[in-house]
Image (cartoon, rainbow over all chains, first blue to last red):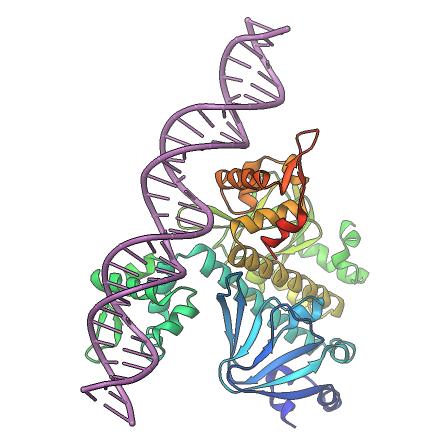
Length: 212
Length: 212
DNA sequence: CGATACATTGAACAAATTCAAAGCTGGTGG
DNA sequence: CCACCAGCTTTGAATTTGTTCAATGTATCG
């Protein structure tokens, strides 16, 4: 059974795995499909086992505010489900995804008392707190310049891998601002182009000043 | 023993309470004292049992970004302590406070396996996720106008209780912007003054539009 | 080539802060 | 009793940061 292979459930005995199998279904999402929408309510937990799920909020002008991308294995949607409140954000498949959907009532009655499971839940919640704490730091403390500088230092490759419009979306800014900022960093010789026309860091120290 | 009275530890038996007593100390903070600073590391958990603790982050220009105020009984600082990362925010006593400081190593070795305690931890973490999720909604989705409208509808009394400079700080805006926005809402007859010169809501529906 | 999508640049605009000045107000000492 | 002071609050003007809109440039791929 595939559940057995998932680290999240490794602490379960055979009987619990059987139970889990009965209270869960495997969802397959195509790129662009929504696992759930902000504002919806749910009685299910979701475990991402394959693919990438993008979480975002939508503001009053319809703009998407990027929150996080989840990769396997991640428990998703536990806040809304445990607390019986609407989802605070929308979950969208970035690529084809496989997600286990678990009935929360069954789960909480049968598996939550398992101490391995509750430790996994604690770990997952700590991860969420960390993610949200980072979002707050990113969006409230750093300037747009700082966020761009941070991404340049921490993951320069992404600038060659995906379109700058998508990078701008991940950074919660516009392609125009991203372009202007990169131009500015180039003029200041903090970054430059290598022989393949790919961005490279020339002055990491100066870039770090923008976000540390 | 005072520990017994604290709901957070109500699930502990006498022996565990004894252990807890030995691994913890009671801190008394005066108003303005810091429980910990953003960036510090810690090997302790804190449980607020009396008073009010304000959490804030500091941006590059020295401005304080208000995150949350904790009231008893609240577990504070568990992200940094569990994850062994620096505190993401500063914790300051708003009034005289009493805080139990618990050695994390002892706690995790002796009490974390207690399933009542781990459920309390889960509850506390869910609360944190909810708080941070609300902060993100507040600061990233709502405009300053929306935040002011929301506070007016949800807690109009506070405008008579504390200085507008402090309210501005809680709303992460400036006294000037708060004043201008209140003036605007008055002009539009969304709010007005009652016989005691206290603010009152005149048109809740219109105010809600700013934040819903 | 030419089409199309992406990237860049300029100019106007928007939201909110900052700085400076003036207006209130409530408690205190003469 | 009331004038005055200190600490809010309000108002105006300039500034900042970043977005939006429009136009132009550029690269790639059939």
